[in-house]
Image (cartoon, rainbow, N blue to C red):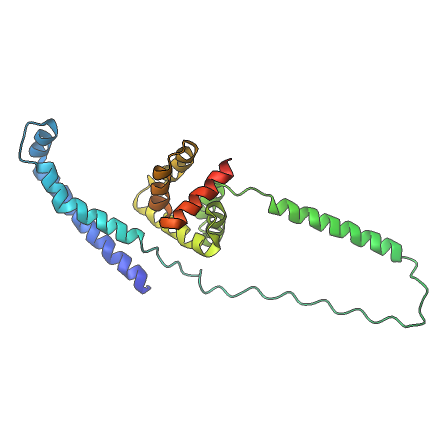
Length: 224
């Protein structure tokens, strides 16, 4: 296990420990909490509990979000082997000036093949990339494809997209409602709620600052 993943496990263990303590405290102080919520108590039990557990839990969640896990196999992929060059055609004799009988047919066939290849390439380039594509990549456990898709959607590039995809997957395991937050991002963008959109980009993908602003602008442009 990498050092980063070990650090994440330590933070998670600390968070689980605090969560367990918080659970026990809530059960022990059930009546006091309900009275405080109803305004029948001046002991401030809810505030005391938050002061003891809330800030530390929030800090741990923030630290965990800031450390996307190291996904094996993403950084040690060997580069694609270069395509072997086609052998150079043999030079034609200087005195061989008679054209081949099927030269015209060959050129026509080559032109048709090039046109067909161009159509296929064009079709691949305009194939839409959506959030559903990203979710499908995650379900297939293909983090490379998920990162590439997210890099296009957020306009952050493949390398950063892989980190964002890993952060999202980590958050999703800890809190399944993260998927609902990501789906709500479109609604907030369409409503022009910039602050809410930036917060969702941070909570779902770990983006902040100028990165999150750039991602928000990219997403808004795709919705236009």
